[in-house]
Image 1: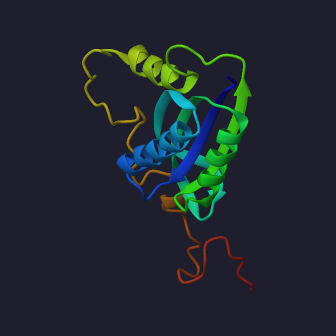
Image 2: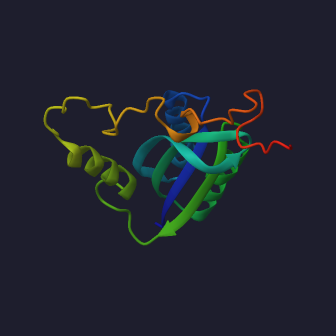
Length: 159
């Protein structure tokens, strides 16, 4: 039986439970036609590279599927009809990956790298620069011409 990976993006307004419900619907469609979902991963609410139907974020879901081509065509049709699904992509693969996908694995690495960083140093939010008072050049008092105190600085008086 051919193997497929299907990723779909759901609108950001729906809840993760509703995204799981969409995945359950696709599993039911596959079960009716002799296929099965072998792998299911929820990648979470992630930012999009560009707006899709006025959405800046979307829920990502990966399905690893074993099914015949007519069953996959029906799944793709159902995903296109669902108003909560923004985009979907189905790819035929030779074998389904065992274990977590690259997205899930990377998320785990990011959390593991940080660990304990030690105590916070004193003055954590100070930039280390000297405080800026009124001694900056643009605020320093400039000498004026003694002849006309109302004249702007640097003005040439005609005699």
